[in-house]
Image 1 (cartoon, one colour):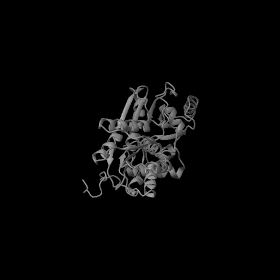
Image 2 (cartoon, one colour):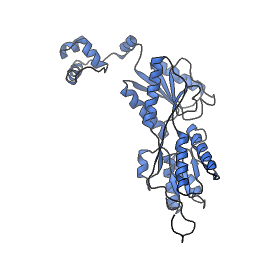
Image 3 (cartoon, helix red, strand yellow):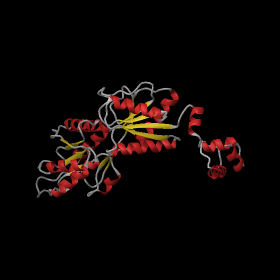
Image 4 (tube, one colour):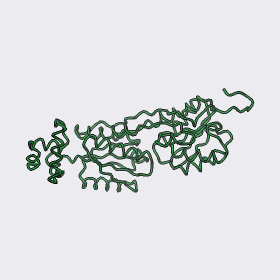
Length: 336
């Protein structure tokens, strides 16, 4: 550091501030110091800094699946937000969601030197007491039903599902069919429960629930079944990828969207606006979920813990071209 300071013509303290990303250094001075670092091959010693500060500037992330779009986008948002706070992220996927695997993951993260942990737990585990997180570790959980035992950040799954169903009922559809996510998913259960409750409160009889696994292929298989339901004029699909498969199946069976069947998804993935037709969907703010997870765990680190409970991030309806008013049962009648 002294060599860098001498070459750049600044103090060692200024080199330290640039090295640690602290403010209060002009851009010209920062550029001089960085150029001197490159010329001398200087790299900050992260282990020494960790010993001096008592922190590693690294957050661990445990996730049980990288196959779902929601988990991937949540992970991306966490990494982005962590970087904005000057933290790196160490990812540890867990293949089998058991207590032993979770304990092993926390042990491995301890060996990798992380300051705190964010767990992306989309499946039912914490709420069913199948898995518990080790005490004494600062943890925030994303996408889980464990708010009484842990600090949880999640999308307002129920609110988004209610908006989807009400949108279709407001368009005059007698009822709304539901293509749900996998049975073990917390998010899928929340969305399905809200679908059923919203229909019941509106005085409508919920049709039989159709189950998928989040994939477009499962949406396609479900769509072949729903295309044969003559009374099916509206479908709330629990995610956009299944909606993509559903749209293909309806097209192959000659059911036009939205003329014959209205379809609404959930997630608002970037590709949903390019579906044919462009997909009406429920937007999830993954960036906000990631930001709140990072800020929550940093707050717990600084304050030595925080109250348990769940923070819900609002959703919003994005109207596109896959939903329309219910088709008239009488072809001779005019459209409402």
